[in-house]
Each structure stands twice: as C-alpha cells, then as structure tokens.
Length: 181
Image (cartoon, rainbow, N blue to C red; front, side, top):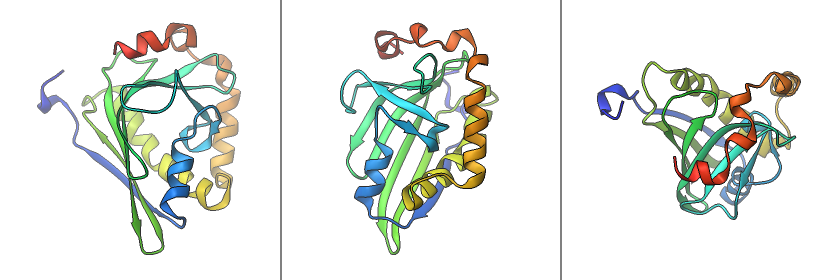
C-alpha cells in the first residue's frame, strides 16, 4: 500500500478560533493532561515534543494507547505534524498536520490528514473524527470546555475504556516500539 494511488486524498478540517495564536498553540501541544478534543486522551511522550519524538494518545488511566506516532514537524506556533496509527488496526501510519494562522477575529486552525490508506478502518475513523476534533478544540479554547454534546460523547467514551481491545494496552506500545514505526 505504499503506492500513492492507494492513498486517500488529503482531508482538511478548518475552523476559526476566537483566540490569539499563542493560546491556541498552547492548548494544542499540552502533554500529560486530558485533551477533550482528542477524545479525552492524554498525549504522552518520552520527553518534550520535538521532531523525532514518539507520542502516544492514551486513556486517562494510562492503561490503553489508542493512537501512536512520531513527531515529523514542530514549528511553534504555526505547524505541528506527526505520524498517526490507530493501535487497534493493522493499517500503516498516515500523517496528521495542524496548521495555525493569525486571521481577523483570531486564529485559523486546520487539521490536515494525508497518506491515509484508502478503504481502511483508519480512513473511516479519520473521516469521522476530524470534525469532532476541530469543533471541540474551538469550544475548549474559547470557553474552557467542550460543548454539551461533546461532553456527553466524552462521558460515554470514558465508560467504554474497560472494553478496549487488549492489542491497545499501553504495555504493547512502548516508546521504543513506537519509535520503530
């Protein structure tokens, strides 16, 4: 599946956030705390976010890692890109890029997915998650919390942690393993 004809087209999810770029960036790159816009996951690293650093999006309890990847670009406060692999799918990693740009009224925030394997569970998951992420991110930055519907969804997701697949257990996704992806 390395052939470009078997990759889906680039998807762009964009929103304007009524906040300065520095505030938007600071929220985006938080580690070690719950990120409602990333489905209530906590971004963990084995150091600081920087090019080459492996990352894992894990449950608040730390028992499961749903997404893993490696930082490809880190240019504060304008651009952050990383590989992206769902731990419960056999699909190869794709790329997620976040671009921030100062515009009238605040900051334009773009989430861009590329190199997503066409016809895969990853493609379906990315298509479903993109809008939730940008809209929840906007709400969190502007109001300090997700919208009511976002809070309901996050509450439901928390209840399902015990039913996470064993392949996604954190012990199966060490930073050393992630670094080799």
